[in-house]
Length: 168
Image (tube, rainbow, N blue to C red):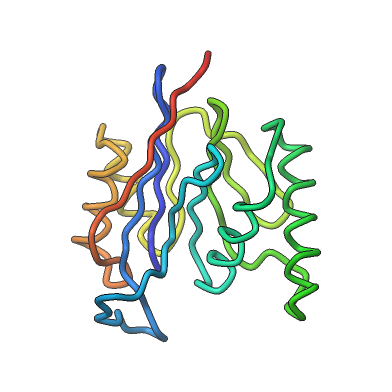
């Protein structure tokens, strides 16, 4: 229950997300707990929607693993290695969440082992329809997240964003 939005411009890629924390069907009013949906680690921006456990494990994994080449084949290999990492922790060896990954001037949507390049804009999560409507009407990534926060009961908190340069 959240939203992550990517906007690919000529000179940069912006990925934004809400920061609401949910338990069941309710937003949880936490103050000093950092449960993130979006992180920039080792020059990779990763935003995920779904289970907080998987997001946080993926962020931990990224702290010690590098994605040298950013294309679908290498991203799938990166995911396979992450799934082995999950299995070593006695967790299910499958990808439950959807992700947006940006690095080295490229941006991708990930669902399971499907890796698809984002060349304009894309939104994932419970607020995707509201965010995509805002993007269609020219909104920035941050404004699309604000729209989802305003209109979707399952999106909340403040807007967070990360940016990388786009190399054409």
